[in-house]
Length: 157
Image (tube, rainbow, N blue to C red; front, side):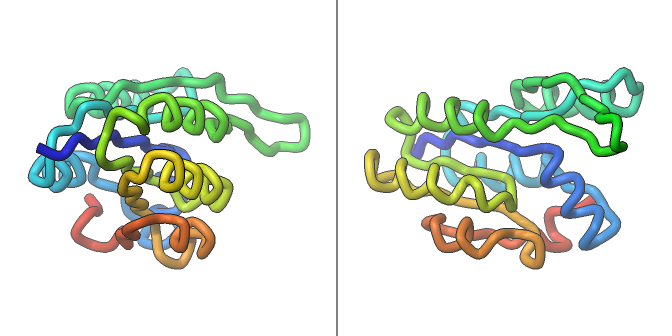
């Protein structure tokens, strides 16, 4: 049975599905789809920690589905922008597990991950799959993935 590791860039998926569709991503449907393809041996959702009841409920729902939730503090800058970037953390975790799985699934449209996918494809000869909103996913990331899955109506709440 194919071993699958899933890495979800929660902020990226939340904002891109909201911007493109005005809706939220359905992590349960994704889990069902991936479970039908193999055994999910690791699933990590990377999010920001905010003292917000809706966020706590969402994070608990992810845990109930089967995700490990990793949180970073939400930082509000003086200019009004916010920071909660998980790129390095996701990269380290992917590299750590890539040698032990057949497929790495990344939920993100962030082009910064293209080099990561190229590296694990080259070093471990594994399949890399990306789920992202078509209009908001970097072409370099799409091209670096073995398989690109456009997030569309069937994966939205």
